[in-house]
Amino acid sequence: MLKADTFFDLSPFSHREIFSAAEYVWDGLKMLKSYMAQYRYHAVPDCAKKSELLHATLVFHDNVFLDARELTIEYGDATKGRLLVYRKNELLAGASVIMAGAVLVGEKISLGKGVKIEPGAFIASPAIIGDMTEIRQGAYLRGDCLIGSRCVVGHVTEVKHSIFLDDAKAGHFAYLGDSILGNEVNLGAGTKLANLRFTPGNVKIRTPTGPVDSGLRKLGAILADAVQTGCNSVTNPGTLLGKKSLLLPNTTAPSGLHEKNSIIK
Image (cartoon, rainbow, N blue to C red; front, side, top):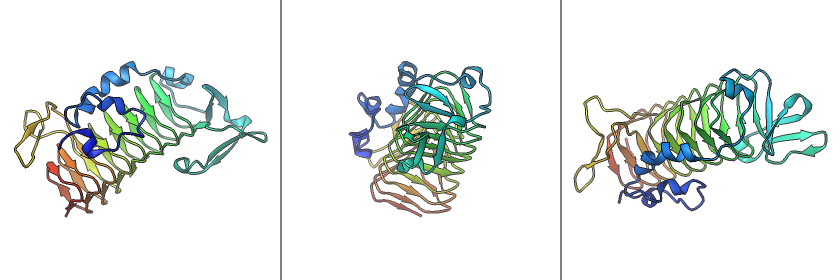
């Protein structure tokens, strides 16, 4: 009932091993720091090593950073494979683009193929960003962020110690703390996944058979595959939404387990 494979199809996820020893779905978050620490990261630009603003757009291709002024870039939707980079008439397949004005901090930052990082994004190490993902203007990745393929971390969205499975999108004004988004989850604008109780103690998960202690002082929400939230919705700490559930706009989800296909209003 509370295992990872109840919430997610893990077969296409490149980092599924993070859940391999998990008794409960939230145990993936307990493994996150150690997984990020041992991960083999790619090269990073000098601005990341110095924690400085990137002053000129860079292209990352075949583990080498290239000056974008010598290239032609079509800034299409990265999640649909429409971010295209050319050197004269040659398409640089899988090239990623870090636009001027982004800030990367630390050397443990990994970029997949076809990633677009827009101006004003702030990415703190460690961070893993999967293929064809967009990190949009003003996004704030605070560290220990594991982002899958074709994901969106959107405008003024803050993410801390969280996991996005493939095709998960937090497009606008969202907050995710100590949370997991399943495949094809979509957060409406202004969704907040709260992660800290007002009262002391670990977050406990309410279930039909009684509460389960998560062992975590901070635990946000776990949204299973294909969950959608409406604009300005909120989840209390320790909220678990089953597959294809809906959290309607301007609604606060009670903490605890909500079965698949739930409609919370």
